[in-house]
Image 1 (cartoon, rainbow over the protein chains, first blue to last red):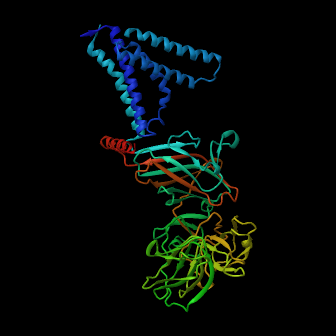
Image 2: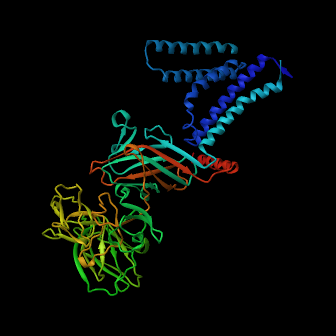
Image 3: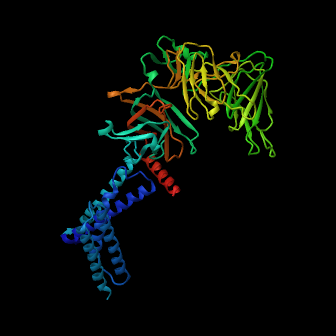
Length: 122
Length: 486
């Protein structure tokens, strides 16, 4: 009835991630249901990039399964990565050649990751 | 190695922290002590208080250019919306402001979605802020202000001379004339809606109007008549004015307004009609009756060959005259002074500051003018009486006009540095309202090129303090209301 430090740390990190996502979703739900209940006190928008990073991290360490679940894994990964990219782009101060290259690099990384993830099905 | 129970305990910590944060935010939104405060500097950053609108009547100010951050009001009226943060029955509104060439300001809350029902409260009066005016409560419990040389019981005196009223309810004097007089007929040309105020004679009202619909292009003009006393309606009637086959002006239709067995008092007869309905003649056996504060003398085109002057009597101190036709350009005689109307659709203010207490003559030599005053108009000097004290207006000059007392609930405001002032007022919030709309009225601010600078506004929503049980009930009710709104 005991765990290694590594397992315990992994559990704590995963639970912290889920708790954060639950807390954020609940607050968004309250604000949606009763406008003006949350946003005047806490700016939820600031937490969105962090929430996306947490989702990606949770997906990364999630044990992969064959079939539909793997496709679901890939689709969620693409959507969250694109959301993160969009939130970063909206905060970009200027749009130039460098930012274009960075954006293209991130999109290529997402594609490479998705293609690599497909292998479990083959 | 770590025991599993300890790991589970550690894993529950982020969940507990998240729940505490959610609970803390909900307690800010639904405070246990029942008081929720929303502040705004009118920069548009507040989630609960919006900016004054319409935008063309205000200026958004900044520190570098105007010396303060907020809004400047340059036209009247303006309104502000505020989001109600839950089920609160009452709100206290506090504002820090500064006025320039604006001696009187009123604030009100809109009670219906059409914006017709408003509860206005006195907000600022330069005259009553003077040390010459003392805030008192009369022996009979009436609130108001008296001039420093007057006695407190002046507020209880039913004599309306030298008395003004500002957004306070007044009971009309219990007066009556013993016997009717021989019927007097006044030839007039009053256009649209008017209020007649009558003292019953021999316990009755006997008025006959001759009305005419001048709209050739419609059928079925309507005149509604409402008789009330102290706000209580005692009769309501409606009369059709023209037939469906009329091709020209309608005939002059007699309308009899008769009531008998009336108690002493002042009776208000509201004549509700559009501007195409003219009253061409008024005949009455009641010795005392007046019209006002609005009087619209119509033209006589198509009815008489020559324009007809209007002659009335009033104790009003301020009138605003306006004509809508070129033929109506004229010089209005108002007691010892006069004012020229040189342009159509332009209001001309005529203010007198003499010490004449008795009614003075108002003459519009060619008629065709709309007059709005702070008093009432009689068609003969003997018919004049004051049904209620005159209204306090921005132009009212207390001492010069011989004013001794003002009936009002106005509270003196708090003076801050550099001419800034702070005022407060309480309003009840319409039930189940998500939003409230307040109206700030500064009569005549545009015409005198005045302004009201507002640098902060605070809404304090108040309800009964709660315990944990009622707190959950309020939260549940709010969530249920929110769900029903979806």
